Length: 337
Ligand code: NAD
Ligand code: DAU
Image (cartoon, rainbow, N blue to C red; front, side, top):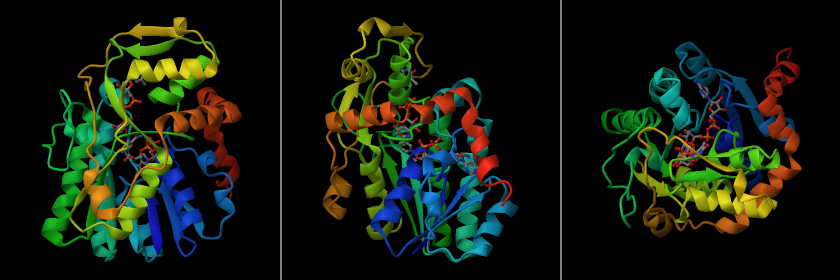
């Protein structure tokens, strides 16, 4: 297959491209990414030399740019990761960029996929569209969509755009809704990489509120395998939840990181809570397990250890992000081609 992967310079997209190139020798990948603050081509070092891989810098909110990419290739499928992805930014910087990229950008991709008769469109979504689940409950694919922050609201909007294109125009679309990912190449604004980097620099670890909010953690490679499976075997028009069903309070995760690194708990600093903070996420992944035979390959403890070791071994990678140096990589590697 020839795949268009959007957002392939981000955390999950770059892991997905690595997965596809390794696991699917017959596939080609075109990575379309605008290189926002979250896009980093250093996530793809090594991959760039693969003849089955190419990169196009384009913005999905620019209709002409999107159409030009679809005209230049005959895509068999679109795997749509590109998004503004950070909840805190959507609250504190405002929703405009989220509305443009997550909603308008998704519509432009969907329209181009229809016009160019792309055989499959995979919408990468999130469990956050369901809002917060109380008690011992878990999100199923039938749980009502009740987003509680601007990021989640725009992801819900993009899911509905994809659904509408399936219903009204016959787009062959599938949607995945995954829980919290962690692993190599995650931008150090998200909980796990931020806490690892701060601990390594003996900086305070900011825990929101009482730290008892629960997130359901999955190693990024397990998510990528699931997306790949839904892409090839999922039923058109369906939503598939993805999660390893390992839901734990944030404070436990932060303490585990400190313990792994041999750092003191006195680094933990309780700070003001996130406005509208969802209390608990927990995925029911029985549909993808039963229908497509997917299961996570990694335990949380094993994957967290692997992740911490990766951030230790790749200190330069996250230091270049924290200093802003990573933004010059594109200029050096691509701008003059
Ligand atoms: P990320 O922020 O690391 O990467 C997003 C990528 O999209 C970046 O490379 C960025 O440059 C690109 N991008 C942003 N706006 C763009 C635009 N207008 N045009 C083209 N490219 C643009 O995000 P991530 O954590 O890798 O998440 C990827 C996808 O997975 C998102 O759709 C997110 O909603 C979804 N998701 C994430 C998680 C998680 O835990 N991180 C869980 C479930 C679902
Ligand atoms: O559930 C899937 C979602 O997971 C994805 O859709 C989002 O793109 C992704 O960013 C993530 O959203 P969260 O808001 O759950 O992730 P984040 O890493 O920002 O926060 C995880 C939890 O940790 C959350 O309860 C807030 C808390 N937190 C986060 C940060 C950054 C802190 O306590 N301190 C922090 O500094």
